[in-house]
Image (spheres, rainbow, N blue to C red):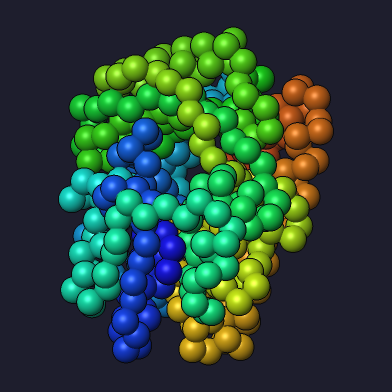
Length: 350
């Protein structure tokens, strides 16, 4: 197996419990992914009990409940509580003991999984030489997409990390003329993080300055370190063919297999579920194929929405986003759950 992120470790844990000897190769020198933007918070809607029943893994020690989200859309601000019909959680990613990565790694170790750190696969031939049925879960690593010939969009980011005096998990979303995607600021376990990205073309200096000013005005509890540019990686939103369970005789998991929301890049839940599906693909391929289709059914309408929005003039995008959020705020709680059903895996566990 290649990749010790959420998808890779979820697959490894399940395969070890099925009696396999599991060896995971990880390119980074330690658990938690790239150190140039972690630790960082990541959020997603899901049910804890449903996730545990589906994956066999209890991640409750590493989550914090999100109570509301703030939105800053082209000069208008909104604060919306999550509806009573939806539970949304924040987790910490990275190498600290409080991270979800560390929790999964410790569970994997207890199950007998061996992780080899610092082993990077640099050629297509190295991937091809892996045994049939090997799982590839290298996340947003652009080199892997290029080596395997998978469609993708390169993502460019500007970010800063620091601390917050708030003890709660928080999140704010920023949309405006500074990016055709979006930015966010969030906190968990005392970590503060601000991040804006754009697929296809790098952010302009003016865009980066505008986003930074937005965050500094909106987050008085943040103490951020130096801001820096970051090539965030490859987003699997390059083609309607991105969702795929197999590459030759290998199994794909996580964002490498397209199990991510191509509109807003929600991928934490999809990563864990696709890891479970990848483990099924080793022993029950028909079950895996069925579950993979269910997991990624929303990919296609969301990619259509992404392509339509990117082609709109900025005032049109502003009108669409503001109108949607205004309409959403007035919906009854039972209907407010509907947009979350487009997050890969949400409402489709079991």
